[in-house]
Structure formats: structure tokens, C-alpha cells
Image 1 (cartoon, rainbow, N blue to C red):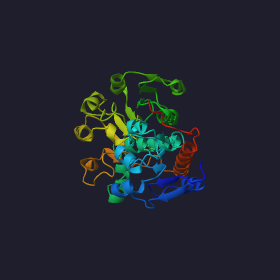
Image 2: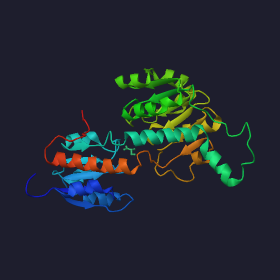
Image 3: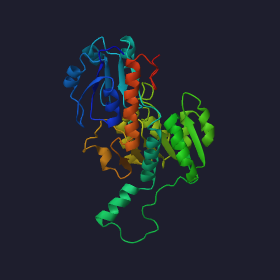
Image 4: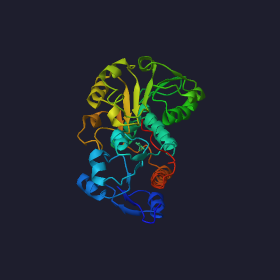
Length: 325
Ligand code: DGY
């Protein structure tokens, strides 16, 4: 690095390690708040910066790159998903992009399992009944849900997270894992998962888990045609991005009994408006995008983001760089 310290803008209050690591070699300015920086302020603040430490809530597009100026070398996003980053614009302006795979895999997988069980065993309804006086006595037919014992689990997108979810679910006596993905994952052998066409997965799975990235190909792929192909009692779980689901179609499928239930950690938009029809459904569990929210995971994400940025500024290999083709 030259004797003039590079400057980095951090777009939010983030776990300490990231900021501390950056501060050893850079001048750091920060939007020191828990809510997102307004777009016009962001565009002002990035001017003249060499690096940007951002979150999934900031749109990194050509407008922002031009607002920053030609010295901008790197954008590090504190997330494994990077659908908010215009990779073509980054490539055009020779900007490296870092992301945070690996360090949140276990946290996301754990939350996916928690959401799946909450949804399939009807815990939202059950907890409400305890509070609202609906709990009369022990009743054989009351609040029965679906178990994983003997079930077929279909994973759409068997990357790091999808595979880890599979490994976590295996001890629940799952009978069969299916997956659909553009690529074969050799790790699938660890859970005896069989790669099948999407339609076959949909027709045979009791649980359908969206673990794929949001891309032009996966945007709204879970739509009415896809819900129609699922089993009537299918439980649909999404911890990837809300954009992979056509939400009106999901509402119709849940309301009409086309599918059994859904658990969502991600929606469009976020936050989901409190008058969303999805919130009126007993068979829909919604969490506020907390899959990676453990202290350990968030701290590691912050640290890795800073290390990516420093490496790029120093002309070194970034620990985890997004490949831009
Ligand atoms: C990510 O990292 O992309 C997650 O959605 C954040 O939890």
C-alpha cells in the first residue's frame, strides 16, 4: 500500500472486527447506524473512496460506481448473496468484489432446520394457542403436523448451504434426499442425495427447500406452475432470497391448499408490510431474514469482508472473491 492511506466507506454499523481490521491500514468512514444509509447520502459518501464495505441492502450499480469515482478498487459485501451487486458494471470499471461464503453456512443451515420444524410441526399456531386460551386438554387430533421420519426432502440448489442443511436433517430419519442443480455436487454422496430434474423433485418431495442463489434464472422460479407440481401436503422452505418466489402465487397456493405450508426467512420486500396477506395465514411462518444471525457468524462475516477489502487494496489475492466471467 502507498504511504497515503486508502479510504473505505462502511455503509452500516457492523460487528467490530471488520472496522478494526480496516482501521489498521485505511481511513474509515461509516454510516454508524442500524438502519440503511439513504441512497443520496450513500452516493455522496462514497465519492473518492477506494473501497466500499456494504451489506445486501445497498444496491451496488453503475450509478454508485460513477459517484465513487475512478479510484474505487473494491466492493466487499458482508453477505454470501451478491444479487444486489451489478457484476457487469464492476467488471466494466475494473472493481473487485468480495463476499462471505463459508463463515455463515452453519448458522444458515441451523436456522433453515429451525424454520422447517417450526413450519412442519405447526409451532406458530401451537404457541399462540398456549397464550390465547385455545389449549383445552390433550387431544389426539389437535395440531398434528408432518414429521421428517420417512420423508423425501428436495433441495433446490445444492451448494454449501443446501448440503449442510441436508447433513443436519439426515439424523431425523429422512428417507431420501433429492436435489436439483445446474451442477453435480460430489458432496451429495454424503447424504445419498440423488440429482433429478426439478419436476421430479417437485412431484416426489414432502419438503421442498429453496437453497439457490437469486439469479435471472431463479427469479420467481417458485410460481404457480411450480406450486401445482408439488405434493398437496408439501412444506416449502425459503432461506435464500425472497426474489426466487412469486409471492402472490405462494399466497394462493397456501390459501387454496395446493401446498401444505411455507416457512420463509426472506420476502419481497423486506421488511414485509404488516398488512401482507401472507401474514393472515396459519400455514405460513415468516422470519425477518435472520438466517445468519448468530454473534459468531456475523462477526466472522464482518472480519472476512474487511480482509477481502484490504487484500484487494494491497493487490493481494482476496480470501473470497466473486468470480466475474
Ligand atoms: C447473505 O449473507 O446473503 C444472507 O442472506 C445474510 O444472512
